[in-house]
Amino acid sequence: MRLNPASEFLSLSLSIPLSPLSLSLYTSPPPSLSSPVSLSGSAIKRIPLLLNRRAAPFFSPSFTVIKFVDIHDTHGNLQRQQAVYFSAEMSYRGVGFGGADSPPSIQRETMTEIEGVPIISSVTQSWDQIRNFKARPDDVLIATYPKAGTTWMVEIVDCIMNDGDTERCKRSPTHDRAPFMELNPPKPFPSGLQQLASMASPRLVKTHLPVQLVPQSFWENDCKVIYVARNAKDNLVSYYHFQHMNQGLPETGSWEHYISSFLSGQVPWGSWFDHVIGWWESKAEHRVLYLFYEDLKEDPAREIERVARFLGKGLDQAVIDRITDHTSFSQMKENPMANYSTLPAFIFNQAVSPFMRKGTVGDWKQHFTVSQSERFDEEYRRRLAGTSLRFRTEL
Ligand code: A3P
Image (cartoon, rainbow, N blue to C red; front, side):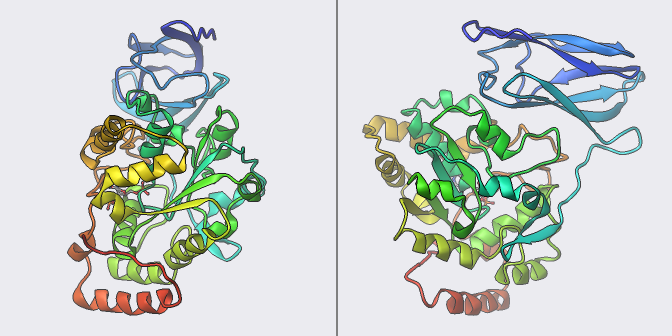
């Protein structure tokens, strides 16, 4: 493998064990290969690839790139899909999904607990390493309860950190630009910790952990944290759809059942109430900018400016306007580097529900019956009674 960072092209060769099958390599979004690769054979093949740096701006030495390979039989039928993983060191690893008799698939996770917080089992497998994660002083942590607007905030912060260079923000998918710290997916996907270890500073780190589980080193280094909270009902609706489309998360059960699971905190990453309240109270001790999804919807430019100030960046109005436009729901929905379309359907099945689903405040009204809403509100009032934290459920 040769790599010349100064050149427009990156060239590398890739060894793939081939059975008597043909193989075609594609990337998402296309086209990032300068020429299509198609091979057949029965031995280990070295495939020369020339990646056009302009067409594949996300491919750089500090990134992990996952590409998906269709493997066809000699009749041209899709046999299986294989993920090909180039790490920062440009090593190749591959794994097969599916086989001749089964379509590509991953297994939905089971649930377990960490210090009483319900979470998917894979996180517990690397919990010691996560706990001991070494934050750097200039790391910026984006913390959220799942589906509160994480991807939106990643895009905003990445734009701010790049002084409004929105083209640069298209260099790689969200999950590369802000690795998900506690994610520990099946091989060959890199874990969040592996991605972060090979990332240059300043790093943008994503977590869904409740505040009490955040690695101590973030506090020791006085890192800046941006927390985004979203009203419970819209958050629940978004999570319900996401658990359906994300083939790695546990099944939700019925809608009625899911409301109960959410209220009792029996969903991945635990109780919404504990999460939003825990982080709200942490502001007294740590450098946490606590934002609301609803405020972002109401006046994105105002909130983007708040984030920029928090990060010590003075941006002029034209830059704020550019970031506001680039991070609007409509732009992000069409942006393959922000809409998760780089993941194949056997992981995020966007035919079930698009990642960029609605992006509104008040969608819960389309889902809750009057009695479900009343039951929810009763528990909600009880749980939020002792705090000054207030949410808006409509604008
Ligand atoms: P919906 O499912 O309600 O549409 P996360 O990134 O934490 O997983 O959150 C995803 C939710 O944020 C989805 O909500 C998604 O549509 C919404 N979202 C993402 N980008 C957005 C944007 N630019 N503006 C508004 N909502 C956005």
